[in-house]
Amino acid sequence: MSGPIVRPYGDTTGDGMVQVSFTLPVPSDKRAEGAALQLANKMGLDPAMVVHAKPVGDFTFFVVYGSASHLVDLSQVQVAERDFPLLSAKEVNALVRSRLRRKLSVVGACIGTDAHTVGIDAILNVKGIAGEKGLEYYRELKVANLGAQVTVPELVEAAIAEKADAVLVSQVVTQRDAHLHNTREMSAAFREAMPAARRPLLVVGGPRFDELATADLGVDRIFGRGTTPREVASYLVDALIVRRQQSKKEKAA
Image (cartoon, one colour):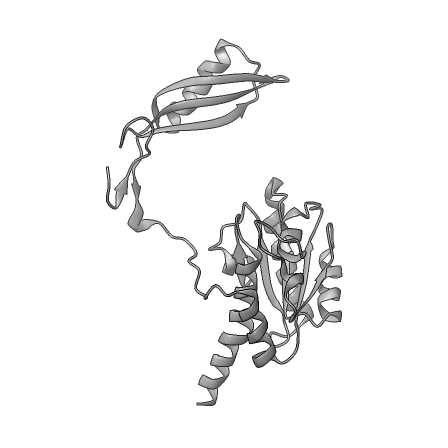
């Protein structure tokens, strides 16, 4: 099946076959497999089959294969499209040097109890990720990486001390929506501590964020999994230099 309405593909086009995994808090036995199939049916998989069951203590981990009855309307899919040009490091440096005329200050951290620095380090550290250098590589960017488990007051204090143009926060821990609570706390703290004209650009990233939830979380941009340092640098230049200068020209006119 092709066009605006699609179904999952398994063995043949349009057969609707999908594979899902989940854990049930029941011991591994025939009754547990029956419970897994019942859950799969309620999820819209019919017929469904248990292709893997493994005990995990007193629980059971399942992999279920089945045909989904649901269709997807591609015309109703909403995503956060990249609305800025993707620049090279040379282009980023040139724009900052010629139009900002000072180094662009960036402060990054993992806030709350989150100790997973892989994401923030991939964006900020010189070594970067996937062959791309991090923001520390950019000559015209001044980067302060605060590391992990930084409190919101500490982040605000550092942003003020560094005269940050942008604050980058990585959140990987998502139990009980910790990433959402931490982000809202951060945005509220910056609104309270600084007037809008002096407030840095607030950017968060992590694998479980909805990139369309900027207004709800009170931030300027959300980046999901797979984001590269080049994308972040390009966004910062576009948002902090290009768009702001265009806005000033329009107001002057």
